[in-house]
Length: 259
Image (cartoon, rainbow, N blue to C red; front, side):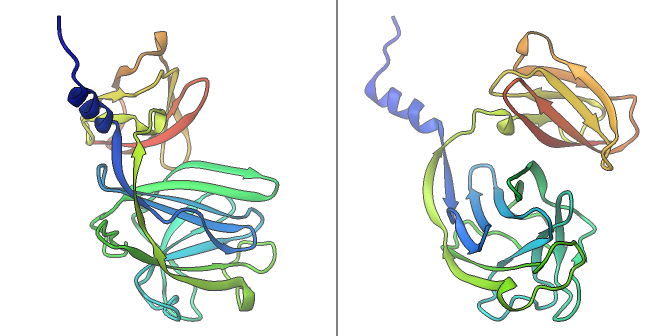
């Protein structure tokens, strides 16, 4: 009979935790908050950003200090009427430029009582010169924020009380239980020749395949709520596609690159 020792139980328990640092919810302005979490195990950054749904709002992050929020080349994200945009500053008085490579993957985008909440993730280091590299060893991060003073999505009208700084925001280490939802699903190999595996930690009911412009290409029904699904998309052209994973409780998005 196999024995389970106290040390073995401890080892099993610790394997369910991931090393993380987080800012927690940081209040930027009325109805606007940011929460940044760095995961040293997955090498991912997760951003939760909230703000008014009837206008653009933006968050810049990095190490620039108070007063350095619009210098050319600084990394930021902003919302438009529908999603989160990866961008970089073009200097004072100029609208930010959209990055050619959109490094953030939006995993949740909801509007409740006029407040949009977006959750997105990206690699700590993307290799894109326009992207700030999140260093897990850092103990603080600087935020600069802005939003339009009235409803609309033209990149203007954000002076006075509609912009500001939260500098030297603490990044506090924490141990978080691994996500057992669909967000923790893995796709491999990725890139793929068209045949790949989706592995989840919870039941999976449906897989929707979209183009990058949002066109639904294919729907795959999963039988028996399987946690491991073999997928073949060899009929599709090479490129990047969005994979929507769904069950009766949640849904999440992943990217797949087909060679």
